[in-house]
Structures are given as structure tokens and as C-alpha cells.
Length: 108
Image: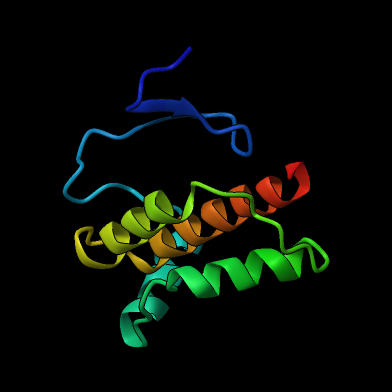
């Protein structure tokens, strides 16, 4: 198992070591994504938008269950106001949260 700072890239077959967290190496697609995001920055979606995306991706399911809105709201608030994410980071977080919400819809 690799440590948090190392990993193996299966696409290229070489080991990637991140040793400069202030200016890490990013693959070209991620750098381009961030460059476009810097030109036209977007705000991280609000809770209602994330719920709507999950509903759409699940084929219209709407029963999310209970006891998750407050933690989700805290997470979204933190991402919107406390973390300096790049455009690619915002995209990954959005996709991760929506994916979890879709899974929740399928489980409820």
C-alpha cells in the first residue's frame, strides 16, 4: 500500500511522488482545467443544486432519507468558504458528493 504522498500511475506505469505541496506537479489535463477555471471561476454548488444533480442522475429518485442535511450543509459551507480549491478540486468534490448522494438515493 502506498503512502499519501506516493502512488503509481497505471496509465504511464511510473511512480509519482508529490514532494512539493505548494506547487505540485499536475498532469496536463488538470493544469488546463485549472487554467480555464482561473479565467472564469465558478462557485461551488449549493446544497439544493447538489440534491437536484443527484436526483437527475438517479433517474428521478427523490427519497434521500433523513439526518444528512445538516452534515451536508456544513460540508458544502466549508468547501465554499474555507477551502481554496482549484477548479479541478471543486469539480472532483462536486462529483464525489453527487456520487454519494446518488448512492444514497438508490439505498433508500
